[in-house]
Structure formats: C-alpha cells, structure tokens
Image 1: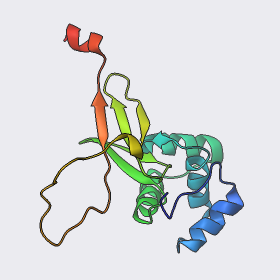
Image 2: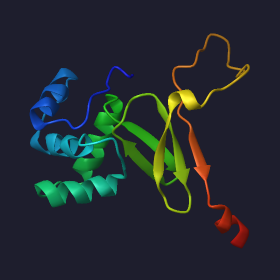
Image 3: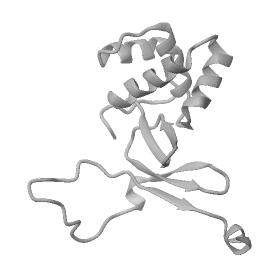
Length: 148
C-alpha cells in the first residue's frame, strides 16, 4: 500500500489530523472536500466534487475545488486519473491499482495491481527506473462496436 493510504470512511477529526501531518492547512473547505472524497473509494470529476460539496456543506467556489484537488494530488492524498485528453477523474484510493474505463457508460472501475504485469525489457533510458505504473484499460460493449 502507498504510504498515503488510509481506511474508509475518514471522520472529520481524522481528516484534520491527516492534513496537518502532510503540512496542509486544514481550512473548513479543504476538510469538507476531503470528507466527501474519503467516505469510500471513489472516482469523481472536479465538477462532481463541486456539486456534491456544495449540496452537502454549502458554497465552495470552483477555483477552491480545483486548487484543493491539485493540492491533494501533489501531496499524494488522492490520485489523478487522466481518462481522455479533456477528462480527469480523482481517485480517493491511493493503494496500488489500475483502472478499466467503459467508453459507453463513462464508468471507471478498479483492477487490483497484481492482475496486470509487464513482461520483458521496457527499453528504459539508462540511469532510470520505474517509479510507478498507472494503467487505464479502455473497453466498449461489443454490441456498440457492431452497430458503429
């Protein structure tokens, strides 16, 4: 598991302590955003976070949500998953795992890390090593392909 991994759900006091431990000022808005994210392992867009935080806790600006998500990614409290060039989801599960993205439904699901492996030489430049591997497998319904 990643050093930043945690259990679910996280309570507000635990969130405050976690943010402080990683040098993040625990403002009310950051705690609200983290409380939403750390209720369960989930994949949310910034717009989904914005809508859900505003529905549950009151007004938070779009800029605050984006800045907080970027801060959490920078501190490895959440993962950023680039689905398409213009679509990013934020993953509250920071343990080692990969993803399956369904192009028809837009659903992102987890694949345990041990289920995928790369065999053979990757042809890495000298003096480099693999730090991590994040795989997104894109799938589509066979029926949708047949119609297209």
